[in-house]
Image 1 (cartoon, rainbow, N blue to C red):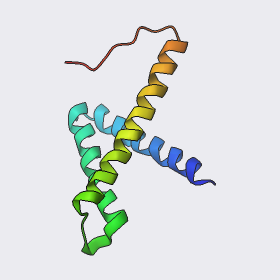
Image 2 (image 1 turned 135 degrees about the vertical axis):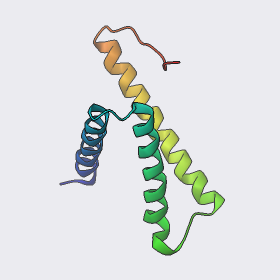
Image 3 (image 1 turned 120 degrees about the vertical axis):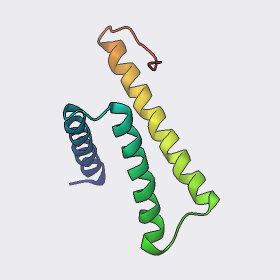
Image 4 (image 1 turned 135 degrees about the horizontal axis):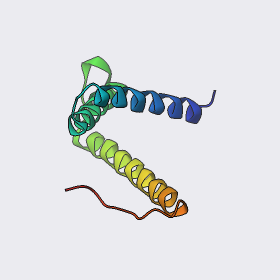
Length: 93
């Protein structure tokens, strides 16, 4: 299985877990921030292992990667909604 296929499979498993947590009554904003925190912790581990941390330039690289990923997801989501003829709504207040 390619890295991209594995990434999509793991992503879908995280989303399934998030939905299970939501269905058990945990608020969506708590789940979202928990996933973000877990991503920050694991990103640090993936670069620095258990005995190190990221320098400010390393943090910037991770943040830039996350921003790129968010932009890709938003572009894909907007295209999906547009193709379905749905009206696009921005973030909830």
